[in-house]
Length: 223
Image (cartoon, rainbow, N blue to C red; front, side):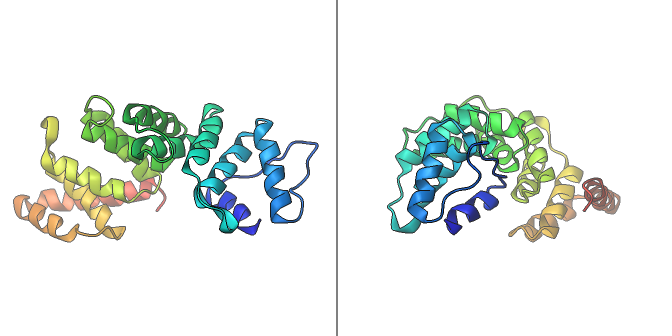
């Protein structure tokens, strides 16, 4: 039971049980039955937690990706962004459910629109790569920026790389240097060499401007 509660906190969920149920009963088996009852009654958070329990295989139980995906879908269809992102992952990689990257992209989009940063990053990656639908660099940049604002530091490196490559006519060394500077400060690996190569192609004024841009971005995020 302690592990299930820990999963709830890790997922950023706050438990609001129905009025008739104040808290799960003592004992793991009884508590799991209680969560299953709540899930079957339509409680989206309980459905999500039940999905997590099947995915993790708690208390010696074998993980069951198929059951996990089933419960994630039920919670996702009720609009829970964490479940939407989990369902999208299952669809993207075929975890207990047939691979359908286009459908994964759709569910990532729903979670991203609700502000889930990891879903924003994953959606941006699919858009950048043209997986599950048309390639769209502009929308990819938009969602990478949202993910970066949400604290996903990998998005900083992705943005720096996009602006360095200049795909779709969007090469901008100052922007690239800004995002890679932020990535380096966040501890992202492999960024130092990229920054050195960029600096060799930029004037000192451009480099200093990019560093100033990075500081302003951090300040705007309250960091």
